[in-house]
Length: 77
Length: 147
Image (cartoon, rainbow over all chains, first blue to last red; front, side, top):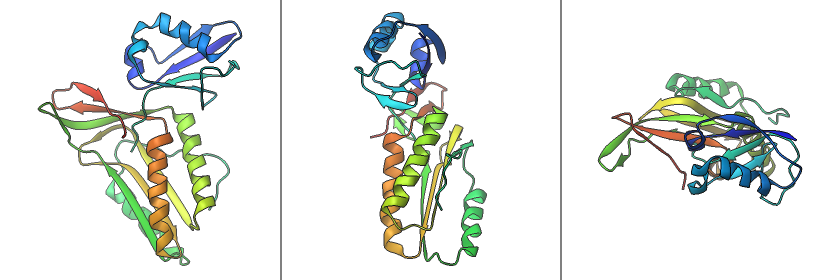
């Protein structure tokens, strides 16, 4: 499946992109995460949460095909 | 009052004192209200290793953030007996000393507005995907983290 990955905050600097399209087999968030860590080595040093379809998910959540976002620590307000 | 659809909480740039004043003024017609409470988040000119923060540049995962603001609103109305509530957050550049977050809660009586306001602000800090880039006077930057 094709999944849109969005990057925010300092992760935009780490990956040099705000958004990309990734093709991946069905599976869990963890397999996508491995792929992204391989593609963007700098991510390994970063602290972030993952949202699927705008909800924070754990790495053993199944990929649904919905939009994924990598979110660094929040700093609103 | 409760809303069903998330509204856009974000405003471009700082939240002006005119906007805040006008927002207070508009509540004069709501005469069941006896108590307002307001939180204003202001950009602090922090010193970090001899450099001073001159502004914060805010970005957000806007769709998710607006949904989270909406969820916080709903949860707050469930927990507290409020008459109304407003939240505005800046996007883009907000200079030191300017306002980047405006939360406004109103109720018939005072006690509930103190508790509700703290709840709302803490929920925003913890759960809304907004990201602040602290810009120093020499144009270098660091990424802010809420604690």
